[in-house]
Length: 168
Image 1 (tube, rainbow, N blue to C red):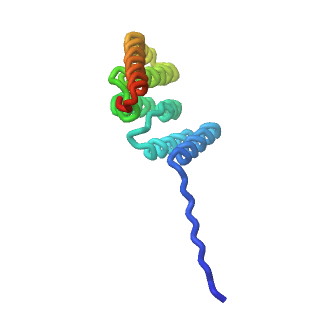
Image 2 (cartoon, helix red, strand yellow):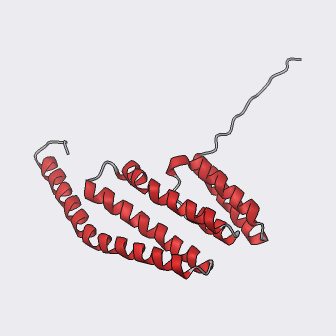
Image 3 (spheres, rainbow, N blue to C red):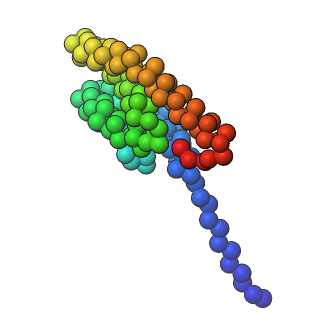
């Protein structure tokens, strides 16, 4: 009799691992186990590395009674926002890259406002609200410019196609 060994490997995508860690963190939160929930979200952040752009860890840290750590996480997200916008949208015009960054900053500051409100820190809430409002004003000025740039680029692509050229 001959023995045959069969080896199988299962590849799990990065997104699946990240999603699984987030689901487990939610389950820990529901159980009231904030320590485990924060631990799982830190694993999710480590899994994503520099691409991590979720405000969830900051929110969980605050709910776990770790306001300073939550604010440190917010600061980290703000610091990484330019790199992340460039990585994700670097193929677009500068105005679109900056708009993407501003949109991300608005989301981050919304989370910071919520964190400050939950922590009953009106002073921090006001600081974050002011910053959020400043970025909203920038968004309102930048959005039409980014749209015009994208429309111009699309018109150039269409004209190139019409003339049989395939360069952008």
